[in-house]
Length: 378
Image (cartoon, rainbow, N blue to C red; front, side, top):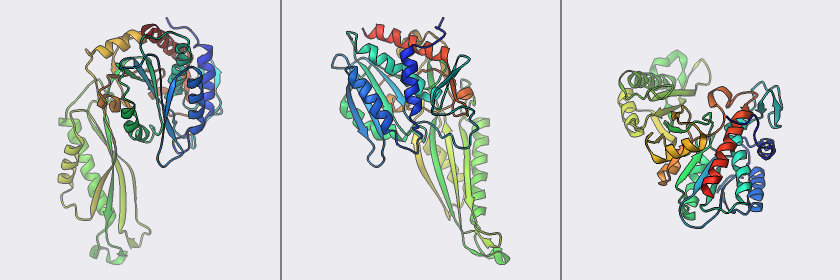
């Protein structure tokens, strides 16, 4: 049974982390400065991976014996915005009430990071037989863009842990799968003209409607006849149009329209096949330009894989799950690092919402996982 409250030091660190307003649109450098100083003080070797164009950075850290092996803990430092949400508490000040810890990022995912940093301090005082590593990224909330930029630097370090735990909120169950994502932009080119002569011109919104019709038809096909995996909330690949803009005035035939849309796909559904099918559905694509603007890989780990059993023992839950949201886990598996997602909190109930909170019992359970990990590494 988990303790009612997390370690005091974990709570102190979480309060500090929440106080940094690391919304993806803004810099995360103040948080990285704080974390790097904490880790260096604990005896870690650190490597800052600066973004080439933005005032942001990722951080890699390591302590323990040199060479392969050990465990890497992965967390992102950015959070989603609070604007437009009806908060009843200050989002960037941690508050506690009724067994809950409130603050932006408490669940997604500064709670896990705080627990990992609390572990790091304890690891600095322990004789480790295997190394402990931390990977702290940025811009995860805007399509895993930060970790993609960090990958060359991570590869150059040459660290090869036996296991990576990505601490996204899974209610402390090992998560072994999530869908991949591809984001797209369709630009539709029409001809401007007076609406009284509308049939003489190509209406960009009509082209955009053709794109939307094709997307809806593809979604129907994925739902009715595509691969299915009942472990997901939505068992099939999903197609979603998020925004559409076009036109300037009612009496002008629009010459430009744009649609932003996405594919969240099962591992058996590939992005390239989707693009081919979409072009076939649209038919005449004259005047329509479709560009893939961002992708991140999915995660598919066999429930019988040894890393799953290992994380299950660490977190105290054998109930392996699959999650609806994306993570950075696929990037680590592509590096050949066995990876499982496991962390405190519930994304559906708590993440990205006003008055975001983390149950203290969940953070305490994460601290217990970290204690088991420290014993294993020692």
